[in-house]
Length: 308
Image 1 (cartoon, helix red, strand yellow):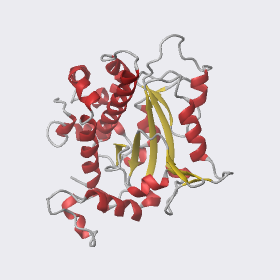
Image 2: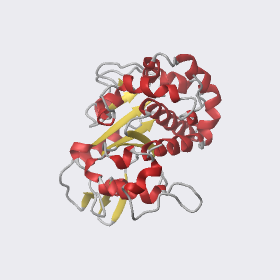
Image 3: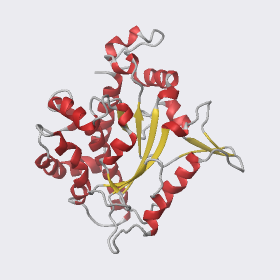
Image 4: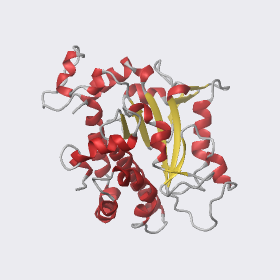
């Protein structure tokens, strides 16, 4: 297992550690498995067209605890799905946890307003690492490339934080970053990704606003901001002229939902992979990548908790 797949495993395990997600998983799991066929990688990729329907199968009320819990569950389901499609690639999607996000990445997306530091609502962060041996070799071989940092702690666990901070610092200018904001509600939240994307896309600011700290800053060529919604809103349908649709129509990373693509409204979440992550897929075909790696879903990748 290389360091990227180690991160993927840690990320998925952090998803299952969320109470709301783990409580919903027994209901979602059979619905997901019914749609998958190990001999047809398209069924795995196309699961994105049905992700909202799967999520809504356990939808409850709209009091504050349900809203926040549903948001965490949706974030977890998106993380689970994207990583399933990306196994064996150089792109990994991680929850925005201090224990997972490399410090140079966290520093690069920090926005400073005078003396106040603030990070975007980065529910998930997708990192695409360069095709160099440090990221693709087995973890046990990392000492061939890293000599100043022990690969394993005394406990036998991977010395993850020091290793990933070192590697992201060394190859920072070759790493693609995609911030993914996940919301169950579209109409009430569309202005948030719109404004954050404006900040990250801006080249200069007034009144003491800056992006990046400790010498790390994002590169517009290697940074995108995406929005992924269920959506849970009821009532008027979403159309190309709906205000919330207009607000996210030009996001650098795109606007997505867990249904099939609706032109000029939202793309299926599966399209975020071809829009933002192809640089991490050797050969450039997500379907071929899934076909090559999915036979290991019951062994190497059994932490996804599906049996095919």
